[in-house]
Length: 96
Image (cartoon, rainbow, N blue to C red; front, top):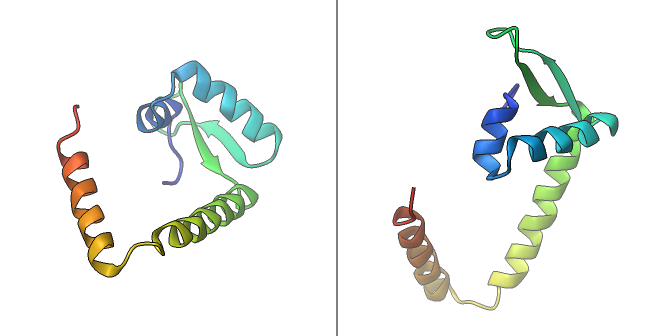
């Protein structure tokens, strides 16, 4: 996503702003996120993954994708297609 304001991260994650701020503190201390002044709003900051943070996110996504492949291996092609169609319907009909 690139540099993102914490309020946007809260919207995307469903977390409160204070929870996002606390998470960013922890991630910044670990060297996974860098916060910088916003170029468009001098009262705000943006958060961005560091190279190490990006590496860790990619690693986590790869692990999760591997788990999902294992879970879905129990379904044949038609069953996976049916599940995909049902999930798309659920997502399309979700409340705002």
